[in-house]
Amino acid sequence: MNVRVRRAFRGAGFAAITGAMLPAFLARRSLTHGTSGRTLVRDRWVRRWSDALLQLFAVSAEVHGDVPAATARGRLVVANHRSTIDIALLLRTFGGRMVSRADVAKWPLLGAAARGVGTIFVDRARAVSGASTVFTMKAALDAGETVCLFPEGTTFAGDEVRPFHAGAFVAVRGTGAEIVPVGIAYQSGSGAAFVDEPFLAHLSRMASAEPTRVVACVGEPMTIGAGERAAMLSERVRHRVQALVGQARSIVDAT
Image (cartoon, rainbow, N blue to C red; front, side, top):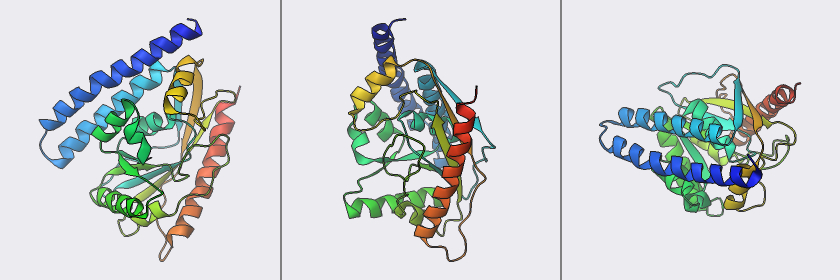
């Protein structure tokens, strides 16, 4: 399959999969009673959607380490961020709700899907948005939900894990929720990084790409230390994620 055909096929497939599955999910959710029932419906849908997209874009995704089961205390999944593929990878592995930058809500089709599954949007340029996000995250964790977060705030190329925004870690304090660290690495030369380009340009480039391999290493759940400040906690988690990225790199580039 040449590049143009591959790009057209995957672009159309992305629209068809999302466009067909989203209304079906919303209809099924509307017929489901109870918060726990709707959460199960959402998690099944996001896992199926994510798995379908990873297959469509020929992404071979491997998860190493034990994936802890969700508990009534909730869990905050924290990972480095390199590509839009990361979203599908985390949702397929953990389910739950994503925390995303506010402009994603306006992206073609993907924005509608993100809104439909309860993505928590944050505009870091507005203090009131940050405070609202912390409140929403805390409520979700208190309800025993899974929340997935990229605390670097945006995507970067390479394996260096940039400083985490500490604000998100305020939400986990007092909830009893566990923090699950994840390190993600793409095979060298994959070009998966989403850096300084419009979403449609990124989607087009990924639709044209050769098959790629990504590895996610899941670490042991972490808990908050007594009296530990959000800034200290965010740095401790960042160091753990950096170590897991190193593990993922050694696996993904192994011959």
